[in-house]
Image (tube, rainbow, N blue to C red; front, top):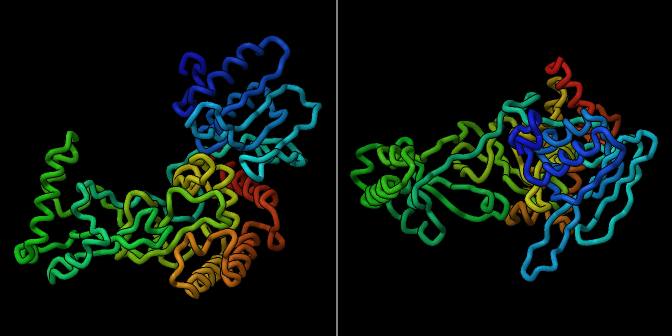
Length: 410
């Protein structure tokens, strides 16, 4: 890959992109056009600027494209591959053509193109969203949750909860434990959170003492030096990133069918695992933004995917989300609208996030609350009224992104 891409190789260009480089080499001094069927990864996340920056720099533009569709192999037992088709030309005269699939297993429908097809296979300017290590706007950073590395000994499953809760000392240190499955499906799971464990309490609880011995034994047996070192503090998670305030808990993957990104605010005493992301959110501002149509439009466009499901990224999606500078009154309106979404969920406390956001069975009050939130957020991003399409939101999002990044690039 380094040989074929030369100085343009940045570690994100996978094997399939080598054929793009070879086509560019072949056609550098002769007329021609090229197109490939590839995995859809080339139009998602960080690989997008890595691939398309040199392509656009060399004068190519997208002539036609098919958005994600499933390509079923004829091999027995072979899983479907999610693909795109992108064709390139240097001809500026022809009108680009774009094809979409309402069902990845179905037939394509042509989508009108007003300006150009960009690297994310949407009608819009050639904006390339590159990963950032800090948020572009006033959002709090999103980080992975805490990682136990404990052999399961600090985690309390449902069938064991009664035994641990019956111990008067150990029960003081039990906390709700949330990963992606627990968050989305409302499942019960707990852990021991022993950051303030006293020697006296440990001495009084044989159950706790046995738990810590098992953790220490597991870590000492590891081949990793860092894990072996953590055996000296068996009561602590190996990686602790627990927020100290109410926070936003963000699943790493969300179903493609969701109309809104399914996140939740949690209190500081609920421990999040490394299978989710967390961002401090004491006032609910981050929750409101991530619950808006504006955010899920950005996620769908610049974020990565696992097959066709949405994969959250703090560096590519969260840190680049172009929230404009807001006055205090606008910020408060967004927070208040987010609270109404939570209130609508609370009307059915028995429902999990997966139930709440079943696209065929969303409660009318929840839909109403999200519509009201979208009205406020759309206006905050510069719309005169609530927007009605993804394309309208993308126009605003890319415009805000350019506004926020141009001063940084000058």
